[in-house]
Length: 393
Image (cartoon, rainbow, N blue to C red; front, side):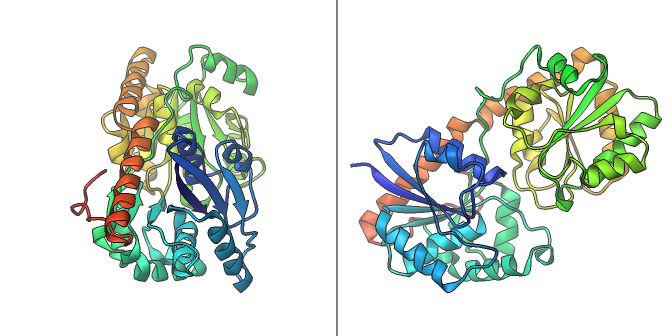
């Protein structure tokens, strides 16, 4: 009989952790692991994709958790009777633990942390409360699986059990995210720009932590220096939002394209000449950077989360909230001869294939599952032997 695994997650809207869950489910052999997904919020955009690989249910929680939501959570967990619970993100992690503490299941709990914490005060009041409670409960987990070393350090600094640390960086599906010879021409035709113009791309929803305004300002500097560039933003909140408003204020409205949420990101990414991540805080191991690199696109990223580890020698990493450094790094890549820029992109793809691919990600998790299940069978407790501090699975 397959092991029953219940994945608890805040929601199934578009986001890095949500995408990783859906892709991870696609890597699992249902004869070995029968998966269920319990979303705290009502089903979102990715629920349909998740339901192709797992049973999907929802607690139906709104903005704030209420007592009856806990009762629904307990009832859902009791119905599923999982052999293992895998939480995704802070709310999903706490939900997994509450499912066990409520008596609905007797199974090991693995937490998945996909967020770094630069300053606890930057988080919402509810999130701060959840983090403090989670720190107190963290020793009850079988493992805390962080997607970056920086995220592990951040959480242990606020009290998360250091013996529970496992680091498994995000994985990229290199078959889906891959170079495409005609992607550049198709993208330029779609947004109506000259064939020779250099495209700087960015994929993320609008959020202050992403500091996308800094990227618009950097583009304005490059354009003022007579560099022929176009910045393309893909993600929610860019249409008539702050990015567009800043472009208009700087007089570069025609040099900024906002494409909104897209289902064809994998076919658009290879059309970029440069990928830019301008985040000021909050990143852990950004999926968009790995996906761009897998598509053969060189990257300029800020040194948030584990971007320095991810990018390595295949791009540029600059301090966050440093406008001069961001402009300089973008200028350096824009000014490279096309062949040199493409060679850098090839090195970027090789790095992702070798070290951060989706099969590697899945296998590391499955090894962790087996350890947790084996320890639970042997000791009747959700507490396998801890890894050495800082070890990467």
